[in-house]
Length: 188
Image 1: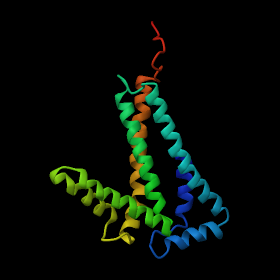
Image 2: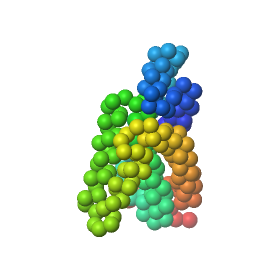
Image 3: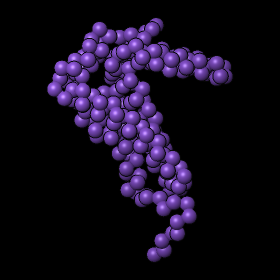
């Protein structure tokens, strides 16, 4: 699903304009006027949902099989980072069409991050506010937010994802697949 995201995302890049004034219109143009644009956009959207579902099932299966146990701790940690990065892809990508539902959803999530500060002790309580302001980029959701989400979605997250996926797959190669909880061990 990641490869489908990369291919369809690259196709969408040819027509998408990451500005508050043009983002929604460019998505509408892709959907209504570009040959195959609606198909590519829908494949991108549905594939993102499938990627999130697949990685959640994979993490739950891995957890149920206790495949996080020694010597696979780094494999488990890198897989958990991949899960977080996948959620970040979904969160940043949701805002890019710049429609009212996406803007409102982003406001809710960013406000939730800031509200989490009430439950942190002392000076840590300021961390969520700083995080929200850093993500948002200005006093309200606008061009700075869209630009940051676009940069995260198109450049930063893919690079982080590829690096983490490389580490994850390397660990699988080094330690092999888990045989599960009750699987007999192979004796030489």
